[in-house]
Image (cartoon, rainbow, N blue to C red):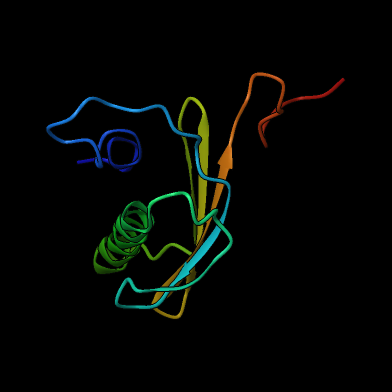
Length: 110
């Protein structure tokens, strides 16, 4: 299951989906996927943050195993941008909700 599915549908198996705000802030995870620090609202489920952290660590580990280690990765979804940086086996993950009025990092300005 992808990261976006975990954020939007992962908590609602067997029940109707509820509308919730996208997370904003950062999460630091250790090499085992445990959350060390978080600036994301406590209203956002820790289970989903833990799952995102686990998936990011898995991505870094698979890249390292493929002889293509990553220092940073950015994932762009329609309304959410996730940027993660590798930290000696752990990671710091930044979560940014995107709106139509917010420029993307690659927007060209005149």
